[in-house]
Length: 448
DNA sequence: TACTGCTGAACATGCGAACA
DNA sequence: TGTTCGCATGTTCAGCAGTA
Image (cartoon, rainbow, N blue to C red; front, side, top):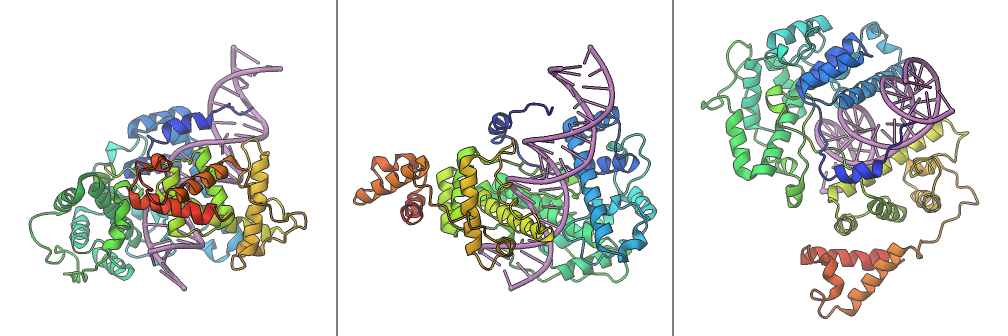
């Protein structure tokens, strides 16, 4: 019998406070070290490690579970996919997985081809004070952190160009003798930290951050001696400010980001916001809009976000993830084509496994809309059953009745819209946002 | 700029073992 | 027998790089 939990209770209480984060570099190194020794460490080892690296035991447990699951998944994929990778099969992949990133498919540079032992020896030479976080039983380190000299190179380059191109990063990794992934991830970490500081402290903070990461007062004049081929030419300055601060209008609520591979000196400062979950009424509204369109416009998403009190990025991510899940399920459905009616109902199934009446109805609408999208491979996976005719819009829904009434109320008050009671619930938002929201109601809701 | 694929972290659920 | 715990498995949210 699984332990009875009340996810809605603690989630509602914690979602507003807990921030998603990625484990810091020192935590990941320590976790991976223990994992390499034992995929199933005893409880006292996990507890000791958790205490040592400042994590909760349950978080450590979850990490090990995810790590094992990830490894199993990769093992399965490797077995299924290739014969070419057999050459490395005899080697434990845990370190590669630790280094893995979305760029793992990119060509590796520097010491990427070094065996694990060389990596460990390199790390032990370059990583500052490993005993700080490593369990006593751990005798080596897998992570090839930049040396102090390499760090100066990276900082100097980052000061010139926080957004180097892939070619620049490859060239830089070659020049300073560091793996491409480490270089790339280091830049991610710095950009995330810069954004976080900018959020919290404004431009002054960002400037202070730049000043902090600046190795010295000397200007960039190439890299320190000791590496052949230097000085490395400074990259052309790019105007990638939009990438640094996308959607400046929402910068106040932008999530701070960090990668798990950052330098330990900085990683402790870069705690990413923790995962949140939409509340029930928010989820209902998202699902309702999804049944209308899988690709809502920016205006629609903004209006919905305003109405629900959600961050526009959360709304966008929700739609993106749902589309992705749909495609994933479609692919899976194609692979085992005998099972053709399971992919939709599972998406919004209640925890007990039974779909509510609304969910079932929504799923039918969901299916219908997906069928109308001829471009989506999601649609290709489904042959609509005759009994799954398009469901009528849930006009009887209390929420839609309410929205409809509000939209109608707005129409009657167009001569003096702002000071009317119909806008009372939007009093905390800007006039433009209120107009956008009501426009959304009129065009999306009212047209139902 | 918006999208997708990949991935990590957190969470939910079901199952079996251990124990009182 | 009921409870607790650990685990495997699957899902969901969100960040990043790449791309059209």
